[in-house]
Amino acid sequence: MFEPLGPESLGALLAQADVGALGASALALFFVLGVVFVASGTQGFLGFGFGMMAMTGLTLSFDLVHAAGVVNVTGLLVNLGVFFALRGAILWGHLRWIAPAIAVGVVGGVFALGSFPAAGMVRLLGVTIVAIAAWNLVAPRLPRPRSRSVDVSVGVVSGVLGGAFNTGGPPLVAHLYSTDHATDRIKATIQALFMVIGLARIPIAAAQGLMPPAVFVDSALLMPVVLLGVATGVRLGRRVPAERFRRVAWFALGALGLMLAAGA
Image (cartoon, rainbow, N blue to C red):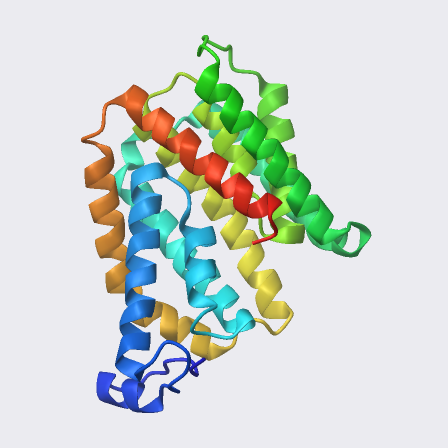
């Protein structure tokens, strides 16, 4: 493990880094940069995946609380970056119903945090996501009319899961990728909804003492890598045919579900 990077120069950052299982401090730093770049690129390409990938990688270098804080802040930066790149493609018809439902769900999830067995609920979510991904990979994709009640229900469920267990993304991804909208429109809308979850979650985490100043300093230092990763992912995503892109997205979501089901 090594301590938070802090505001000093790169040389001082390397000097402060504690040499652990990752080897030399420089290697540890470049590992963190690589994890954030790949995770940001994945989000830019698929519209999701940053949180799980970044959290898995950064906990190898930071303590759990610090890693979670950095992922919260850099995740919001990733969402902003993808949203800005695709800002003209928002599905406002979905957004106006899902976003308020998410906000309500986040508050409910935070207050209900102690009422659910966290590990069991997250594993159940993972199994459900795997089943949804598998179904969409093998079943023919049929046009589905947009339903306000489904939008609201998905928003509430995502908000509760995001507020209670920090796992609110998969229901949104599964719901929107099952529509027949263009992939850029789906990705843009997902980012806007992720921002709702993030903006609701960060103040709550800060009130609980989980967002010390070092979290924001490290997140600011990582911003150039975040933006480069997002730009790379968005550009690559636009080169993949829509139907192939959807299959990649369902495979990735299924892998995410497996990780949740396994308790990763």
